[in-house]
Image (cartoon, rainbow, N blue to C red; front, side, top):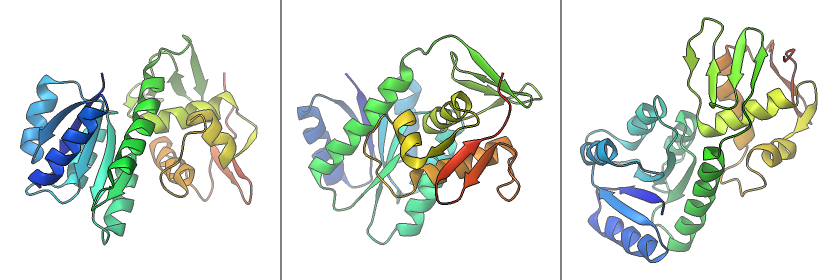
Length: 231
């Protein structure tokens, strides 16, 4: 049974989502702010957070940024209709998706299932192997990326899947549809240009200058190609 944590300062929203998702077979825990969420995460392994951006005290964007430094837990932001910039920032910080208030329960369920199916797939142990390029080591079996200095570069689940797809297909020109098939296995993509955002995040991790990339090269009008020599 997957565990979902609803983090919202509105009691009606919390209870409505809890009742609905429990009827669909999920274990649902509730938090009204960052402090309660931290208490839950200290004692429970959560699979997905439904996280309101506008919380009292520490807001949802700050929570997302802090969690992404240590965790690949699924995160769906709950936003207002006027929060477009906050949504974009949240996605750049590593959130997986967003839904707008007032929430539509069937949409919440569909997006929850989509994120949890990807989390479940990424948790399956892949074949034991490592791939190396330009001093970097992608440990596919351990889902780790080691930098040339030996330190670990932290990646979200989506970032790891995309980098693994590039490394396994080095030298090939891959369209966005190709990359979606290789990473999300055809799942619905909840926001536009998600691959482009993931590429920007990967380039930052790898120190890859988008104007003169060494690794991920933009093939204008087509997609991307990973140009490093892979061992």
